[in-house]
Length: 256
Length: 303
Image (cartoon, each protein chain N blue to C red):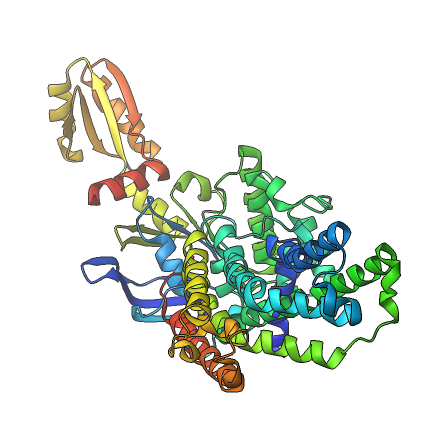
């Protein structure tokens, strides 16, 4: 019950914040690019897209989201949410209110996950808008009469979400530690770039063990068979860094 | 005698091994009192209050609030405390009501209580205006509303008049007196200006460089003040006056003679002695020694 109260308090705080607007804007980026592409050049990847246009559009969106946009969104959101307290000097008010420190910590982490899920849901709603728009922009394809593989889309999203759990916990910890806005973002962007290059360019055998490599794993023919194991590792990292982050949060003398 | 609401026993704190910020602070705040916690900037007031509220960990000594150790029942104790530490702690992107709603459920307060505290601090009509558009005084008042939200038994206000204009300071003073009188709230209010709080406090603690210099009721402080008061005398022959007043243990103070001041009858007696011995009396003046001066004397003599 006390966790629910703390979680509700965190949700109220994120109302009208950059983090909230960024979630919606970020979710609209790929659908917007797709729409521009459809208006300018027709359906992307004519061959498959013309036969199975709805699933092709969702696949394209899911690939771009899973590889780049979602990990980068997590890096930003894990910085923006703790910044609400730093920027407003409100840590002291939070910590002198009758809330358990573990509730405060977990509620903040859950709020990040809520925004992550909102991002994925909003992204798919926007894709549906693009699908409907493209039905009228390209009437010759009769797009809305084609099938939609919802289970495949859901599966892709679960992979995207699970492979980013490790990054989320690490970035959350860094975001809680850092008063400075730039440092956690710089660390996150650098490590994500490093991890992506490690998987897709160097095919490094260390890739399945480094959390910033995980989002790119399913796009590598070499490592994608190990996706299941990687997702468990991602979950393990999430748990580990959540515990480390909480110990650090409790131990730190002065957050304000 | 009332049980103290706050009692610290030999409270000491180190920010680093070399830097002892607080040294054996024995703070005692009686139930129903308004306790003025005074000291110059950097004297350790905020550190003491932060320790009491559990914002800082691992002090030496002990802290009891409502007769309990904070860490033995942190949530239960904090539910009964409203606090404002240093600058206002508010979410700038939210309205006044939204800021209070963030903590409403945490304190188990009703929606009506939110309206009530906004009304108490005079912010009931700010509507959709976000806090970033508030003046510093409005932010300070909203912080006080937030501290009042749980209808606390103990209110801790660290430098609450920062940023308030003179009218705002008077309003705040009246509000604090009213909360104490009508709701029986125990209030700890820190300040670096004695003049600002002396009109409302019942008890005073003076801290300097992490050490308590004085603690007691306001009347204790006033009698302490009277003990230190001096009477300045200037006559046509100060050497002769010095001899005539030898029973009063006079001291030479620049161009004047100074003696310990007790009461106004003493002024009349001294004037009579001097005039009876044909001295022209130019000045008989109690040396400026109000509480503010005493505070400065106390703190500067220890600096």
